[in-house]
Length: 125
Length: 318
Image 1: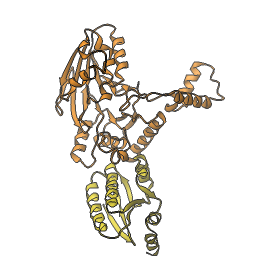
Image 2: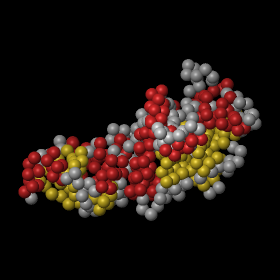
Image 3: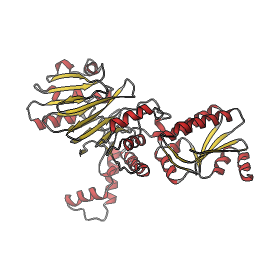
Image 4: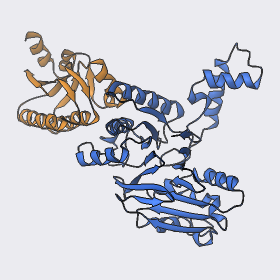
């Protein structure tokens, strides 16, 4: 799956695309670990997952977000979810992931909640 | 094959309180306002057709006990939770004094799965034959222990039935009175075992008190094999997916979402949500069922899985 990354001030935005399921979650998890490890050494406040391109997520894929949240916390950061497609939003609710991960309707709103500098950087990009 | 649920609750029995009953009676009366419900027939029809399950009925509160009838004279039942008391009455009433054979299959010996046995009437009747199957070394010890002083007044040795303990080996299919029985090791404190029962072209999977580690591909494949094309999978859906991989990780239970996914991969026909969280009331369980059916709808890929939520008294013909 494609996993684009962008940096806005002190927040990393990761944008997975397509389907995230049992077949590719290990690859996704490894990529996340790498990114989060890299950002752990920088002054990154958090990571926003821009899910506007994600069409489907399975239980194994949801677990990756949970692990990412734990890893980010270990580095003193935080993760947020943004711009979910309706189907993915429903899966988050049914699995109750909406209760343990912060979700925002837009990437900008998620950035704003993590750091105002990142939201300004996003506006200027 | 007919499947009959005598107990569907997880961990500890629960019951409706007077408040629960009062409130749902009030809701029913309000819903029926203005209708001419002046006969029992009309009232029954209204209740069945216009009230949601969580108002007109209850999922019930007995702990795990699920009977299945593969045909023939012998009884087959999974676990001896508190639902076993009513199951025992059913056996005695149906057999009316004649000796019967009851084949029990134990997922594990935690208290909620054995607590009904001291109240299982056939155990007190001479001539009754009870064969308790399981994979745990401590199977017999656990049954004896719960009837030892000071926990219960009738010691196990005073039971009049002919009681035999039969050890099964996980992964090996055994023949029990014409039924193929395949136990499978599951992840739960002290281990638990799921079972696949095959008889006359029908298949039932009973898998409760089982946690699934999503990163374990071998585990997933093993359960997909157990569930393959099953007519019914009775599945531990005690917690939400988020809970099972966060605050309740390693508690030994699973979720509705994983139940759907495993059944879809295995192309099972029907999923029964089971081992309901005791803190969930009927409305909550009904909501979880609606959401699970929606999840199945969102994720089905050319295979339709029927999703139900088990309740005490439910009967299903496979």
